Length: 432
Image 1 (tube, rainbow, N blue to C red):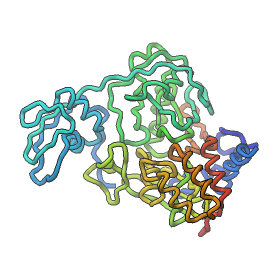
Image 2: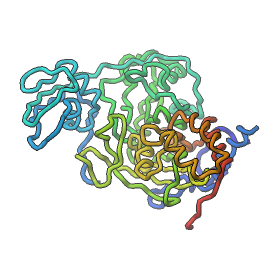
Image 3: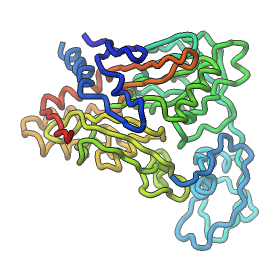
């Protein structure tokens, strides 16, 4: 029986029977985990059947002022909140909207508190960004799947549908709430720093979030070093002290953290393996979505993003695929945005085009008609983007030991995968 998760230092690899050379230790000669990774995935079947120069990104926007006239060349309807967001790099529209509602924005000298107010060419806008209201995180007795723990770090297998840290609308039931209880820490407040939307993985959630004074005298302060989306399952490392936090954050910044993901996609990539080097920026038409934009920049907002992928299995006659990903950078929604750009949105990813209708339109024509009812029932069960953080490797912040962990995907992922395998499974043609 393959264990649900495994930890071992380099160079030993007996636990997973995968050579550590496949963990992409060298960015100069990157390699993928071999197909023996399928040994981990087959355990599911057993269990279920038995760039250019970039401007620095701010970490705090409180008090930032904008005094600017709307460009005369701008035509059409311009929303006030959208226009201000486009003029202050990296700020979230929600933060701008809060400032507008607080009466901190004037148009042509008059206070405007309507976020959808229409601007015209020549309008003079004066804006001051409001202070962030700290978010409090209460300890909660939430079951956590702790893969590894010592005095300095935690490695957690995050379930899908769990939010990593408290945010407006998600104050409770988060991974942070559970960690505070697990580490026996009191209520803490987030820092006043802005939680950025499009930053490096190491700063995606502002690691100083737990360094507020309310943490009291406790010597252990958990810090989120990187983030997984709410719908993404898998491995995530948490720092328990400031030194560990700083050391791990630097590893993310230098791209030395090893991260391998697997996903189920709508359709199959045209090439069985490759590298996607397309910048990612905010989608101007959808505030919760990112977009891969060819070229070095997109109105100064896109940032360098690179992902490597490899098709592990072609499923259901080519209607879907099991795809392995390795991140060279850590942009928000990077795999999801790159998959959409490639024309293979993740199965179940409604935000990026992997809708139920899309899945059915690709699966049904490629499979025998007697599978249609089964496919309809299968697709109706899709509740999230089927993306799982499978492998995580890093240097221990205190001992310097090279550590790596692997955890197979959860049952919902496994069930969908097994159904698609039942309909049809092929190994991609290797060019090696």
